[in-house]
Image (cartoon, rainbow, N blue to C red; front, side, top):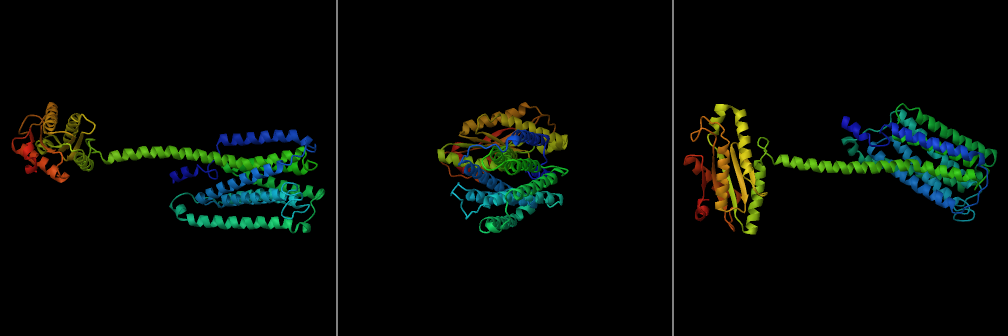
Amino acid sequence: MSALADNRQVFLATGAASRRDIALAVGAVVFSSILFLAAAPFAARPLPQVSAFIPAYESALVVGDLITAVFLFSQYSLLRSRAVLVLACGYLFTTVVAFAHELSFPGVFAPAGLLGAGPQTTTWLYLCWHAGLPVSIILYAWLRDRGADARGLGAAGVASAGGAGARIAVSGAATLVLAGGFILAATVFEGALPVLIGAGAYMTQMVVCVVCVLALILVWRRDHHTVLDICMIVVMCAYLFDIALCGILNAGSYDLGWYSGRLYSLLAGSALLIVLMSESARNHGQLAQLSDQLAVANAELETLSFQDGLTTLANRRYFDTYLHAQISLARRRKRDLALVLCDVDAFKAYNDQYGHQAGDACLKQIAAALKSCCRRPTDMAARYGGEEFALILPETDLAGAEEIAEAARAAVAHLRLPHAQSPTAPYVTISGGVFVLMRGSGLGAAEIIAAADAMLFRAKNEGRDRIVCVEPELRLEQA
């Protein structure tokens, strides 16, 4: 469950807001408030009409809201939070209505606007647009307070991925139908709607302000704020400044309040998108870092799977893999391949005399001595099993293999590990058998191992503490 909680911290909808997040939000609100107070006394001052302002501003707003909705829908698909789903639908609603507002605005695409716009179409669409998101935020806060939030990540969430996609499709379709209904009412049935001129428009704007304030309060009063909560607070503050400058304090279109309000609206639409994109970039960076760490961990795990736990030499599994690979390479390059099998003399007697812990320590020292004799990168020392070891020596002829095997035997003898029960010396010794695969030979791994084991058996029978090699002309016959 702790790992699950850590996973949930990477999402805006579930990650707790840090002091830095809160400080940034407070800074944004304070800065916006200062700009609002500076612009409010001059809101009714006329400014030049810039015809390209509305299409540029609302196109940016529509694209931003649509991307934000997509981000939120994707978070819902992972978190299964109905609160996040409602908020995503709110942004989708504002996208559609804002686009209709842009099409119907006089002078943008047609002198009187498209969609059969009437005198009040843009005003009603503006109010629907600015009321839609605060209403979705109110529902978001209400669902969060009721605990109708994320079920979390895990097997259950993965199993219901298809169900989440269906709910997104149904919710998105319902949002489009709702937005279409408002657009239809504001265009086709525009004449039947109440007149929003003078006091009527003022009162309607005040109602929208009240809805925004209610949304802000409901989110703010939550005990534990997420990053998404903090973003919604900033968005609602920007919405209030927008409505106040553009719908209450100004005198009409293209004055200072009208321009300023729309810039606040753009700020409100961009705030969450910027945070979501920052979150996405951060998560991708963390994912890349975790991927690198996982690759390193997998490499270490693979190394451990091929390593003998006691001696740290290659284990039997890796010995078999490496021997097969070197046999194929020797055949392809027409070169010799030597195999040395070694066995600790009278090791059972050693364990009986000194105990198994001393026996393990003895094997570790022997392994280190054998490994020191592998001086080329391709040479490999392995623990073949129990007290048996092996040396795989690519591109090594019989003379070279015998020299290395004798060096290994001498290195173990040089350790002078006491062995009171040894029949050959008062210290630990090893015996070895050497077999060299002739270039072009068709022998397989099992035959090579059997031939080297036969030489090891001869070394044991001939008195131990010695190396026995197959003469070159007898190698195939002995094998």
